[in-house]
Amino acid sequence: MKKLFVLLFISTLLQLSCSSDKGIIIKSSHPEIEYWGRIDKTNPDFTELIWSGTSIKINFEGGSIKAILQDETGDNYFNIIIDDQVITILNPDTLKKSYLLASGLSQGKHSIEIFKRTEFAKGKTIFYGFQIGENDKVLSKSPEKKRKIEFYGNSITAGYAVEDLSGGDSPDSTYTNNYLSYASITARHFDAEYHCICKSGIGITISWFPQIMPEIYNRLNPTDKNSTWDFSLYQPDIVVINLFQNDSWLVHMPERKEFKQNFGDSPPSKETLINAYEEFIGNIRSHHPKANIICILGSMDATKKNSLWPSYIDTAVENLNDTNIYTHFIPYKNTPGHPSIKEQEKMAESLIQFIDKNIEW
Image 1: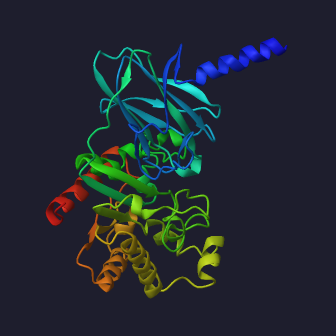
Image 2: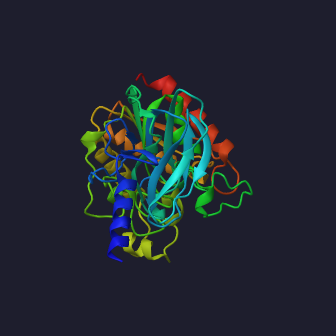
Image 3: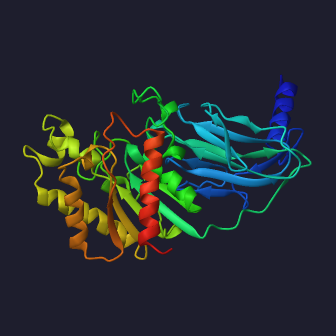
């Protein structure tokens, strides 16, 4: 039994060593690995992905590559992107495993990216490193992107149910894909580094759950009230905020516990809503003093004809008296449910045109 234990221990060491029969292990702390988004790198042995749109990328020379991952719930999904093309979807297990991401690649240089499609409500995913062949090698990082953009939003920004082609607005996480959201599309269009702070159902004054965006926007881990994000690590050129859609529904639901918790017995006044929005944008400005801030709304029914919510945003922005804070309202899509792939693309087109017209960056 003792001999068997020793053999198993040696076998484990070989599997975890930098060079083994399975190839070379590139630890998560390797300097040539690129990380995008609010990613927790505080532990030298692994990296945690929590927010939508967070991603890991490496350039390498070789025919195949694996990743060592472990998911908290088994309900997270990732796009695997090779040489800038999405080739497959990965659903990591709750056990620590090595996953083959690509094989049979042509000789020469390649890049691979692991992009988190799903939201933080599905739990975090732990990344331990990559594995490549013994004769393969890690290449230098891509040049740093010249532009940086950050988004704050709700389910629209998350890409909730965007791939539910039945139009059923399914909550199944297989249908959520932040990569196809207007936010991610816009970032790719401008070849900008991308951060996305979003949660389905969230609002500025009230959400479909207890937390509101002003309570979690400054966290590294949104589920930990003691977690704090260091804003100095990422100073975007543009910040886009798409919030108030959920508020527009929930301020009319006095029977909900969130309403009673946030407003008591009476719905919030127009002034209360404007002040809350103004305060949130002011907080964003305090963390990003040089950024252009675009306050958008749409394309769900908060921007339908005669809606008052765009006027609340206009007033809040006017009150801030900041020439680098803009408003842009995307017309109501006038279809059921959340934006489809085509509707997300139209949103991106609208935002891209606005940026091209109004902002030099």
